[in-house]
View 1 (tube, rainbow, N blue to C red):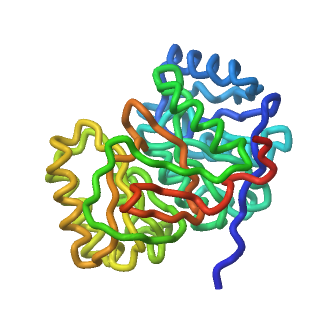
View 2: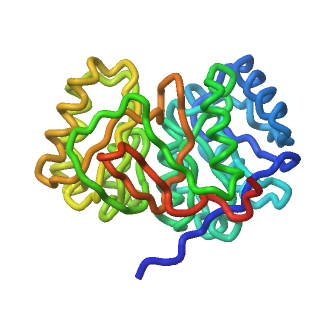
Length: 306
């Protein structure tokens, strides 16, 4: 029996955002520019003392990064957690996280790329909505559309609706289900672990960057051969930045889901593109290739004010 979905409290101007570095170390200047963007939105920020730690290609040891995340979830003054950067390292935290404590302190968690691992694992273990959206270090270079979409997703009482400007219908139809997914590479690496995501009955969202078409094919083939794609309700494709010609990527995706016959709608500004709109992982949505839309059935947070 599916447990009740937890939606975190909405974020309002004046609320405090805790900043976390669960993966790779990051560029300090890009971070400061992102901090300035968040402060200009009216939010207060909490920066842990160990946020700038480095241990090789990681932002501190696994235990340090897991402890940092746990403390931010347990801190009652913090209403949301934004991640500084992706890169690599999030999946190393999974055995160290106290999911019961996270469930007991639900709050907004935002990130993408390698952070997909945390978004999906927390949704799966806690049935809590998480948010696929910009990182602190990408905020300054992100478009105004990205920033306004972020504010709307985490602070509004209106359900989100997305209609891509360059939509591509790879397989027609309509479908409903909770949205799950994110970075294809990260999802592939979770398969076969105790934290592998569940896609059955879900709208599966995929995006990636810098992966050649044959690698996209290899990853989707792995998921298909493992049975992970068999019972998805529908497929949403975001950005595939620097992954070769889009028509090649789309042809690979269409072939990977051919055995399911589910609707596939591509071209969404989600992921590693100029625009990176925020979407709630775990929230029920409807996709329709006829009007080329993805519409969520309820607001992504509780108590939104706009």
